[in-house]
Length: 241
Image 1 (tube, rainbow, N blue to C red):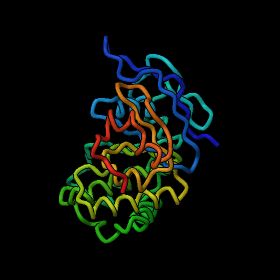
Image 2: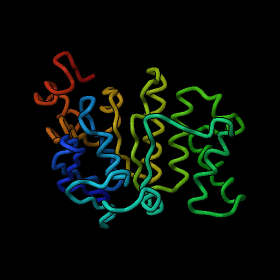
Image 3: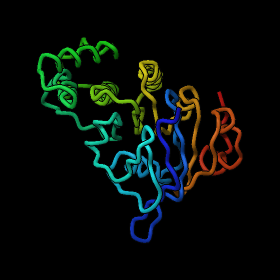
Image 4: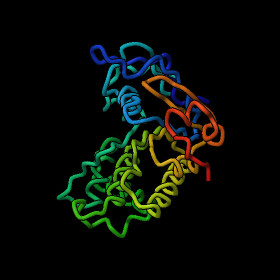
């Protein structure tokens, strides 16, 4: 079953075409990665899906319903959540408080919200930091908190925008495990990331875009050997390991 379908999505900003007739289908339960050079249009694609931008042309379907004119908060209520490249938690509040705020999308009970938030923190092995203020967290823990907050909205599809940026190799490995854990809980994942080692270990399929247009799609091993992708993004020295 397809959970998300982008059909000929185009996004113009004045005379600049950031996304050009893009077609993507994501199957329920898979992890699909969107990669490409800086400025390729990846975050613009996410913003179109999440309701931040209204596409200039094309249609977006989530769970077989057209969504390309809906507001972000309404999309979140239907089960479409996202993270952001630059995390912006409530820095003066605790980890638990930050996650609880997201749970109020589906409940008005403080008791229920706290229990739900604690369950999510337990899932991410993060409960030991529930009373730590977000402003005192490391970059790795802030990224983990960002995913936990998104998960608190009970998503069916989660858009992850460079959640591994700035992490050390060991922290990247931990984040890969977290993302797989999210998928195993029943959430479909659409991820933008530049760390190719992580993308190759994580993804079921990969879509590559350049100048807003799809240039390749396939399994990780296929993408790693694609001459167009190597030339446009990976570089001649790239080796699949």
